[in-house]
Amino acid sequence: MGDDFSYEKTKFFNILREYGIRRIISSKDFIIALILSIVSNYLILSFNFEKVIISDIIPLLISISGALIGLTLAGFAIVVSFADVEFIKILQKAGIYKRILFLFWYTTLLTAISLISNIFTFIMGKIGNDIASKVGMYISVFLFLYAILAVMNIFGTVMRYGLYRGEFITREKIK
Image (cartoon, rainbow, N blue to C red; front, side, top):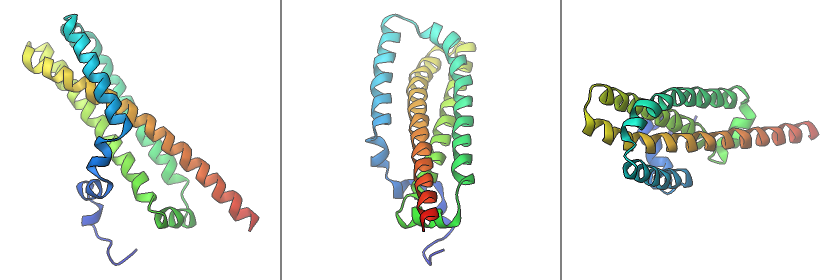
């Protein structure tokens, strides 16, 4: 490890700062989720579907959000388990390895926040707090859509990682 490596530098918000909040906010998955959630929430509001969404759809989102966490962790396990010292050195030298690992951390956190938001919205709907459940629903729709798109992005990362790993193995065998 380099001299500048420390525990502080491995904390989530330090890596987030390094990765770039602006990079996240300007990402395609964030922008698409934001646009889709605005349109979805407008349609839900226009057709007065809030109660149906909160009572019937939010429970589905709770289940799916939990499954998304599992999928993200499975992808992380694949990336970590197929790593070897030389391949990691190449990825670190290119500045890719930390970004790959951070995307998994970020996506897991995002899906967990989506899950919590969905649970909160469902509970607020059950106890009859209309304002909190409606606000929660609007936030939940965005977070859920963003989480789905982020997990899809992670699948792309796992796929690229596998392709890079295959190329690395092929080149090593040729040497």
